[in-house]
Image (cartoon, protein in one colour):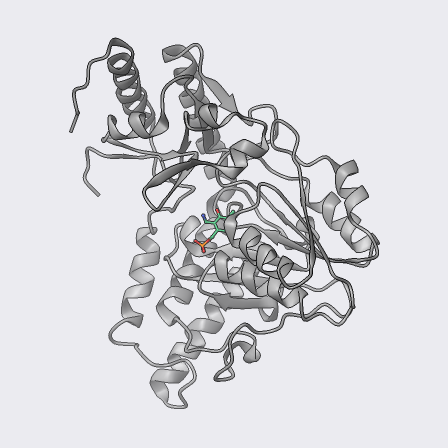
Amino acid sequence: MTTSVIYLDNNATTQCAPEVVDAMCPFFAGNFGNASSPHFLGREAARAVAVARERIADSVGCDASDVLFTSGATESNNLVIFSAAQMSTGRRKIVTSAIEHKSVLGPCEALETKGFDVVRLPVQKDGQLDLGTVQRAVDSETVLVSIQGANNEIGVLQPVKAVADIAHAAGAAFHCDAAQLLGKIPVSIDNLGADFVSFSSHKAYGPKGLGFLVIHNHVRDVVVSPLMFGGGQENGFRPGTLNVPGIVGTGVACHLLTERIETEMLEIDRLRGQLEDGIRTIASDARIVGSESPRLPGTLSVMFPGVPAELLIARTPTVCMSMGSACTSGTVSPSHVLLALGMTRDDARCVIRLSLGRYNTDDDVQGALRAISATLRDISTGEMPVRE
Ligand code: PMP
């Protein structure tokens, strides 16, 4: 990475830990065997996969046999939601929230066109679900409840265990998209209380294109049905040659978390506090989105009234940050998450997301504040220098 760039986009992806890269490298060249092959190189690869599976299971508190490797949280989410359509319960209702990631909302929408009843629960104005609303929506027709652990845009945490209890009391399965939990706070499958939990390696200092689904059934008749058919890998639930380097890297990434997450989380929270205080100092009218709810330690979603996020980001090229909007086919549309909080489209266009991670420092925070402050000043005075 260019040293002059400050990376504050850790909810989009994290830098691969150097330890992860070192562990993966041998599996691209010297130990390149297929984990299903019967010979020496294949057995070495299979052994490395088994070690990684154990490390991953240890780090989230489940059995190694509960871990199913996928290409990421998008695939894990699709696998669970489309499985709901195959479950032999006869139930046809799926309950989710309006602020889920598109990889949950997309498959729900696809099932809706096949006659499923999809309920997208509203959230309160600061992003959290109201448990009474959940309780009223989940009933004897509900096959699956799918709620995220933390929101990728605003960092707000959901009362996942309480939602799991409501789902189970109604005989429904519970899925948690925990893509934003791993690497940011300690994760325990038992504490989530979920039957299915989706994870993504690249949000937790591991490689891109690798994720896993933990299957820890609490409800009878609820099973995963494969999206693809082929060889018998992963007991036939996710066929295809295993991504051995990616799996090994994820094992190391999870092992590092087991050792460091508690202290790392406190440090990142401290940096976020500095950043938040600094933002309030440079722009007294800035609004911190989701600040009334429990949040991930490193996420800061900020609205600068009247300042389009696109403009702020384009004029601050030394800071990598995100906007609370999606750019699809060349047009910027306000984020469904911010709209679900009751924000106007105009205000939603003025939201940026800063997300801190393991490799950020006090200097990064001070540098980002200086750069953002200079851009805000230029915009307010009508000056338009482009800084490199
Ligand atoms: N769910 C959430 C909450 C996410 O933040 C993301 C990534 N932005 C995903 C799912 C998709 O993860 P992946 O990139 O591993 O497919």
